[in-house]
Image (cartoon, rainbow, N blue to C red; front, side, top):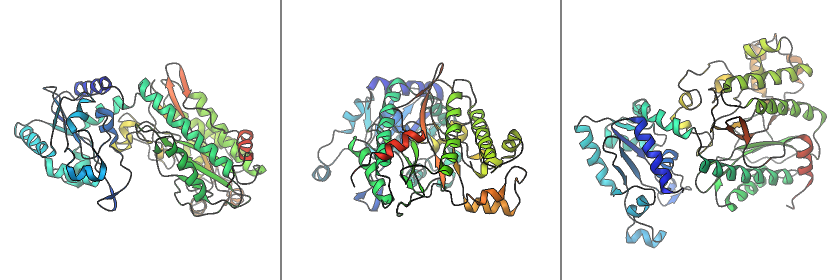
Length: 465
């Protein structure tokens, strides 16, 4: 939690941005695993956390843009609650800690909203992503769950996006901490990788690093020998000689800020020649994208250049052919690079994805529809204060190769006979996190081993199992 003045200022800017009406920000409730008292780790809604700073279930915040009045609604603990969870500060005390002078029990919220509706006032809310908050909006405002997203306030969405997209010094310091811990998680994995180790052992060890730091993991762990599957959360395989291990993990600080890094590690002591070739092409694309980061450049241009670097490298290996620019324009690179280049990051690992990529990453402009680039979550011109990931990759996805080859898709640019030799290669990705500064960019956290030499050196520092 930051100083109360920070939250007061954030809410003041939001009132000014939205202009008039009532802003309703719903916090999250506990989420049961299999019965009410057995819950998952609690995670507060990020926009509620940004404006009210309270990581506690069962809260809702109301901001009156016209009167300036702010109220947090929530119930105090009962004696029965104290027995199981210990004493907790009253809602009024919690509210005062973030500069909110008014608090009330939850049953007062429907009365306030009903009065506002009867006066014809606009009630602004964000698109809900949890089913219980969809139900709450139905009970409070009569908004059908299926229509909650479309009925959400665009004025509020844009107000939140325009604030949260620009990270303050306090936020950047938190993200630096999250990324530094994330690097430690990756180094731990690099020192564990060897034939015979289970994916689950590495997943457990890296999660322990995050928890030991006082935080949590920022998203489900990707720790896999099948790196061609971009979001692979299965951890049941055993590492074997001749393969590579792909790790995509990040830490979340106690205050909720995320890191997000990826590494690809040889299971044997050294990369094979073929692995080195593909790894270096991916790394060249990664480093070229970093060189381009600066205010004013559309991130879409950075993506397209990173794709051109991959096409040039694949041509050198005879996997692709023809004109590089034409190949990228046709989307031929997407056989190997079917995802985006990066995304915004902050309180959410994919920052504000619940509010809509078109607003967060594309400034309200329509996203492309071509396979590959349509997965680009960020395309807008970069601005100082933006925090983002850089994560190009090269993936050999047998099912995608078969589908494209059957249709003779982009055969002008793809040498399918040569591609067949790599169909069981897997996938490679490096990922780092950057802050856009007034004159360029800054790596967040601390450097992660990413060159072949650096990765192999860490790989040689074996941790005892």
